[in-house]
Length: 401
Image 1 (cartoon, rainbow, N blue to C red):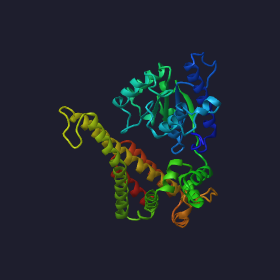
Image 2 (cartoon, helix red, strand yellow):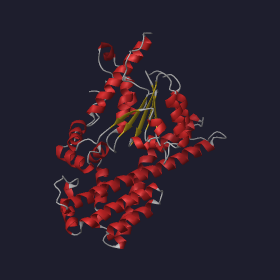
Image 3 (cartoon, rainbow, N blue to C red):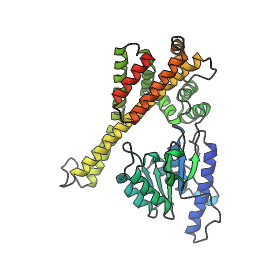
Image 4 (cartoon, one colour):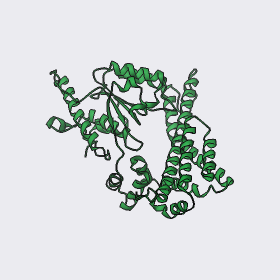
């Protein structure tokens, strides 16, 4: 087993990264022996990973980080870095390695205040690892100021620093940054590959694995969540009942309210444990005794953390709504496939009776209008329209479609 084994359907990318990790290992080994570096190397200081949702973009970047930090003794015997078990691999994969820094957006943007310390760290030598690695999730959310800070660091990197940037597509990243990165594009894994992974790695029953892989259309993270989390399956089942509940105005408005409430509750549950831990860690760092008062002059720091946490909650709520919109789009796409007599496999085969009823009761044109109404809801959320207003407009349009 290696760090590449969990990357589903990305054999081409894994092969390239494995070669780069081998050459990176040779560079570090040569430097430690005060020997000249290899003449040619597949390693570079900045990488841009792109791909559709669920392809495993961030997971791939983290696997590469683990391979770069691998300290397995097998390397000295000709083995490849990235064993997956040594301290370097393990801590990089779970996010606790001292020389692997991860930057995430707390809200709609990655702010400069969240980047500046990481950028400063990028100019230092690794503390105890082999490389200083900066992993930026959702690099498309860098704003002008934080993007300029990253650009300077990527233009003039320290000798043992590697930047790993993740984004949906190359066009989402500032041209000045992407031009200085080696680009790797991931593809959506096949439904069969995702189902096979769920059976082998998660112990999911083959029938269940096939159903969730088909329902998520190759989205690895969502398929894993649906296969292993009953609450996630229940939420999805509730969303897929929405098209049957919007036949009148009252039903449409009630369905919208329930969808927004579920997303808010989901965000709250995901955030509470993390927020409590973050707050206690910050208080301890500020010198407050456990359960005691904060030192004078530190209230502003706590307030800043609370503001960041609120932004992250809103972001998590938006992510939950995005998943619901994706499920609804898949539902109506299946309806359209039935209306057009397409032979493609239905994503929601477990709801075929409902799909056929919807297909018989409407036209392809009305189905297309409903799909557009869902897309319009996503665009409204992008413009920061209040979630309830955006979802109500969508459910009313689904009713009238």
